[in-house]
Picture: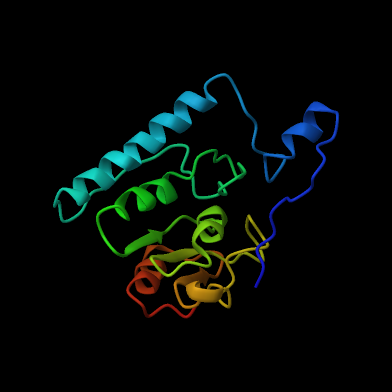
Length: 178
């Protein structure tokens, strides 16, 4: 399974063309406060990871922008830094395995791409059906990893209109997907 990312060697001369070398979609605008917001969001995720690394049983980080659409080398879906992936990498310094549970309505395609071929980070995503929701090309139930990462990606797409009970059921392991 191959998750598409831009690999073009030449960026176009227009500002939109140059931005396309680093942004996965045209809806992800960069403004004056983008870096400050992205940095603060990632620091929030790192603070939660640090609490867990120091022995807290659980920590919750409310991050905005969320980060899960950002790839290792590309922004997308209003995400510029992948705060979940950065926090997972930070935790990997002190533990052998990390799990990410993503329960956004949209699939975390960037997080999946970052860990798709790895077995040290389990990525579980409960999200709306990607046939009908962004990012459209990733998040299907048959995407389960690549190489050493096979079995360490679990996508649980839900039908449009699914509610809290459906998300909870899927997160507990009894979801049937879309």
